[in-house]
Structure formats: C-alpha cells, structure tokens
Image (cartoon, rainbow, N blue to C red; front, top):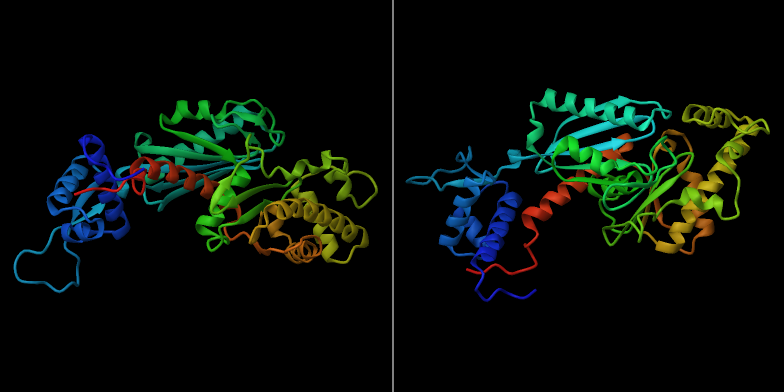
Length: 385
C-alpha cells in the first residue's frame, strides 16, 4: 500500500499511534525528541500521540534515568511502553503434562506452572488439570485473568484454524475436540491453538537453537514423531494444517510399528511408554546386542522420516526435541545418516529449550497476535507528518 494522501484522519491517527508505540517499545524509554527523530513525525504529532497512548494505558512517563549527566533546567520527559498493560499465556496440553507460561506484553516471563497427567486421561480431566494450573499461576503472580490479551496453546494433532482438533490420535477424546471454543469460554480473549511440534519450532527460532536460522525443521522425537517447519522464518502449516506429520509415514507401505522396532525379545514392546523406551536405550549403551539392534532400527526409522522433510524443504538446520533428546547418543547417528541420505545434509542440533519448547512457542504465538493488533500498520503504510 502506498503513502496516504489524506481524507482518512482516523486511519492516519492509528498509523501514527502504531509507529510511535513501536518506537517506544524498541527504545525501552525515550524522550519526545528521540521519538520524533526515529519516526520522522513532527513534534506536535508525537506529543499528541503519546498523550493518547497514556490515556489508553499503553504508555507511561518514567523517572529521569539515574547516572545520566544532568543539564541545567528541567530534564527532558521520558516515556515507555507499558508492557504491564496486559498479559499473555503460553499453554501446553501434552500426553504426560500440562504447562503454563505467563508473560507481559514484551514476552518477559512472570510465572510458570506444570502438572503431570496420565496419557490415558480423558479430555475433560486434561482440560481441568490445565485450568487449575492456570489458576495457580495467576494467583501466585497476582495477575488478574481479565488482564489476559491472548492465549497460545500447543497440543498434539492436526488442528484447524478455529482450534478444532481434526485428528488427534495421541490423546484419548482429542479427535474432533473443539479445543479453541472450550478454552475461549474460560479466557474471554483470543485463543490460538497450534500443533505442538509447530509451536516448538517457533520457540527454538525465538529463543533456542534456531535463533540464527530461518529455514528450520524441528523434530519432536517420540514414539510417533512429528515435525514443525519454518520457511524463511515463517511457520509452514500446510494447506490443512497437517505439514510435518512424519509419524504417519509408516502408513505408506511401511507397516512396522514402534512396538516392533524397539522390541528386544521378538515380541512387541509392551507397555510402550517413554520409560520402557528409555530402558531399551540404556541397555544399548551397556552393550546389550538386542537393545542395540532395537535402537538402530528406531533411529533408522527416525532418520528416514526426517530425511523426507529435509529432501523436500532443504533446511539449514534440523533441531531435535522431545523426550529423545534426553537419551545419550541420539544426535550423532541422526547426523551421520542424514549425510548419507540427503543431497545436502543440514546442520543438526539438540533443542535448547527442552520441555519448555511447546509452551514457549505457544507464548510466542500469543505475542505475535498482540503485536499484529498493536503494530500491524507499521510498515504497510508510511506515516505522515
């Protein structure tokens, strides 16, 4: 969109407000003169916008900075973005736990909470466990539920834009669950529901191993692995939200299940859970031949799944997360086999965020939503004096 030519003062005010607010947030605190210089707006325009932002609760005057050289006369007034004007939640609804991260509008973490839940728990029980964890976190931090501006959620499954779980085989009662609608009743603010591997990919790009890479595949390594992809720094969900569901590749003529892959006895591994799998990996480290063969089969399957995405997307980096990151010796076989299968092998790294990745990425989605509301016009229309 080109530069405004007049005729819409309301839109012009919104544009100027977004520009000034963006400048204040980026600076931490700034004088009117500094904001004028950064934005290119006139001094009277900046003064009027700042007054309006203060009235709206989005900006506040700050005390003069300590340690600065004082000039004669009254020091220049300084202003800052009120990151405490609202709050955000990043939530994880996973197979074994629910997790909460509470942050201000700058994304600064104010509190966290987690509770364990069994993989067999029905949907209502899992959601109730999440509600109590949220309530505990808000109470401990003294933050009112009414101050929440947006909530991001990461959970397993193929998720439609309105937050309905189109397919969620990992959790009982998850397929068809109207998760977004149910959570909106509790929060009364926008709720953004996303696949857990996708939110983890966003988190690693924001604060983790992928901060320096815009083309990334994040592998949520588990018994049925999933993946999230960033292309040019943007999350790639696919047409129906099913991009990265590499755990389904065995349906394409490869009917070997994780229970068979990880068996050390010739019979399917039962019960199939993370504790049992960790034991198989431990036995392999101790030199047990059957366990080493099982781990080798499992790793080759994981590599084949990841290689399919690498060949399609040619990422700079593959980040491995999920429970498998805690198992010794996971990274090197993956790196070696990707070099064998891929035309150009990507760099491979372990997640830096660990268990916090899914909730952290959900928080980033909530923050993105708020920033879009506050600063969307920034960069789309040039502010005028």
